[in-house]
Image 1 (cartoon, rainbow, N blue to C red):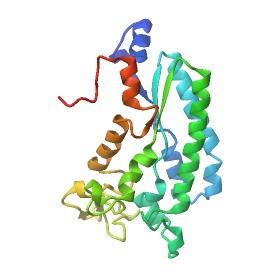
Image 2: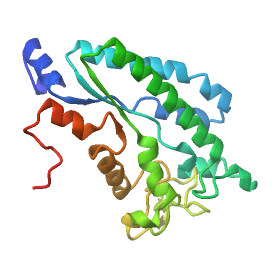
Image 3: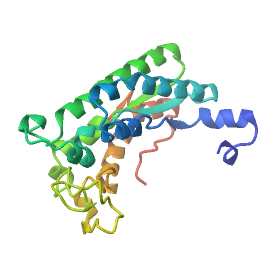
Image 4: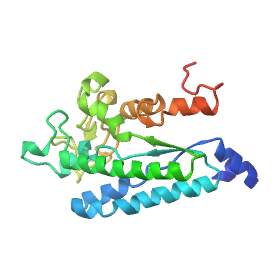
Length: 239
């Protein structure tokens, strides 16, 4: 891949040094596969140190290649995922957040993981003070439309999938989007946050990306970092 952009090692190092390097997201699918394969919360929690260690190692390796500005995403609120809501459907209302309809214990898992990841990033910032290590808060960037979907244009809410095979959340593991039986497809994806139960719609991704680019959900603030690195360039200006 690097050979596409540069030839000599010195050129590659300079190219990476001038780039904003997105690290991951790493770990999300590990958690997804485990939870959806019926692993217990405690079992999945035992994977967290290995995931964070892998992210930390990737950051260090990238810095050795010349990276100096890195963006590291946290976990999404998996308790709001259509697939998880279907998998862990429960009759007890205490199972859910009354404001969002998301599953409390799953979102707590995401929050705790994000806290541990941020502690590791803080450690790395102290270890490599010349590097700029930015945390991308995917969790709260997504929670804005789960908390208030209609105010963000999602008139069908944030939890029901646009493409699926019916059910309370228009999602069935036996007939996911793309399957001939998944015939319930919305006519306007912009009214939905969830595309197929596992992925967002373009409208939802745009809202998350906007929040990150504007600095609302990045620490340190991404626009401020970019301005410090090159005050003559505003990558967020609409021409």
